[in-house]
Image (cartoon, rainbow over all chains, first blue to last red; front, top):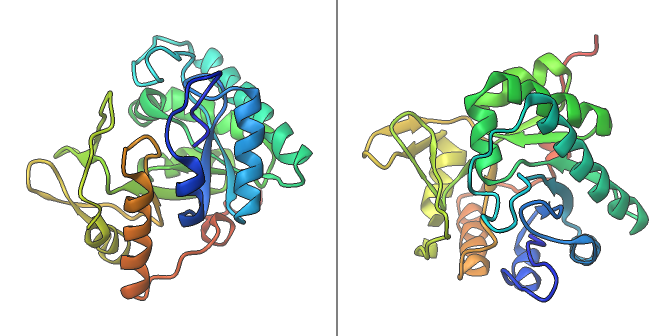
Length: 178
Length: 69
């Protein structure tokens, strides 16, 4: 959600928000901008939807779906920077940051690399002791070790390969809702 | 996709691209907002979960809180 920026629009957030319980809101790295962040936080609050920071890689042109060779400390700071920014908007609009959910290539990099997993957990812990990390079950152990509240999630609009890894799509494909 | 969501949340199983069933213990379903029909997908999933008697709750009620150290 909130992946539009400037004068470019992506996704119909107003139509989607009423059907959600939690929203992963882009923080300006893979999509979104400060104004879109505020508007999307307000839209989520309007619908009683939990606010999450959809932290991504700094790659607007690639929509965060290309892997970048970022260092562990860099990754930690990217997550803190984006999560902190969304937290500020959530607080300012009278809500709170409920969770952090990594986006795109960052998501798969964290699943594949324990050092990245520990770095993202450290950043989430720094954002607040009640901020939840939303990731696949494979990251549960790293979250528990860091004392970070965790909810395991899965996908039905992406495919898994035989190893249980997600098959990312550079451009989202249309699928049958049923 | 509704049926897939009910199976994933209810049985903890999902069919991989190779046709093999995977075991995945998840409590939340992520829907992409950039799919052209994202609102229809989310709506269909919610309807299927409701029909299967699976309640939707805020993350704060689902979270696993590590033991206090």
